[in-house]
Image (tube, rainbow, N blue to C red):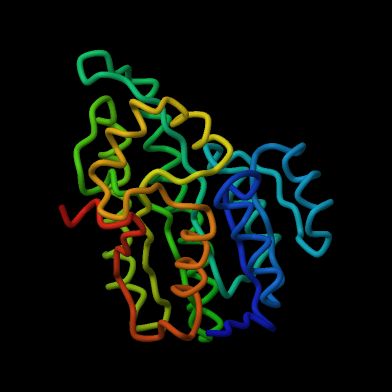
Length: 244
C-alpha cells in the first residue's frame, strides 16, 4: 500500500529520538514537508544531517508561552503527530508532586496546547487534517510503578476521543496508537535484562516487543487518506498484549 503526503505540511513533536525521529524521516520520504520539534538542539542537528529537508524547531513543550510563539510562526500544518512524552517510574506510595506535574504537563497538557494551535488553523482554512497521538498500552493496563504514567496515557486516550468528537465536523480526524515496549535505543537498554523482558514478553501473544517501524507504519496509516473513516480510535500496536 503506497502512501503519499505530497503537498502536506507535517509537525512531529518529540522528533529528536526514537519513534518521533523515525516518524519525521518517514513522512519526509513520503513527500511531506516536515517540521521536527524537540527541546534538544543537538538532536535536531543530527536529525538534519540525516534528513536535510526537515525543518527544525527547538522548544520546550512545558513552556506554554514559548510553545505558542514557536508554533504560530511555524505553521500552518495539515498533519500532526503528538509524540513527545516523558516517563518517570515511582511506586505508588513514593510518587512526588514534581514527577506528577512533569508527566501530565508533557504527556497531556502539551498535547492539548499543540493540538489547539494546529486544529484552529485547520478549521480556519477549511481543509481538514489528521492528528495522531502516541499513547501506550499502559493507558489500558495497570503496570507496577507506572501509576502516573498509566494515568497520563489514559487521559491522552480520552482526550483523543473528545478531540475526535469535537473536531470531526471540520473534517479533522484524531486517533492514537498504543504501543507495547518499543525497541528504540532507550527501549533496548531499559529492557536488556532477560528476566524483566521475559516477564513482559510472556504476556504478548506474538512473543516479541515492537520495532520502531511497527509503530511508524501505524502512524502513517492513521495520518493518511487510507484511514479516511477512522476517527477517535485507539490502535494497539502491542502484539496482542491488551487482548489477553
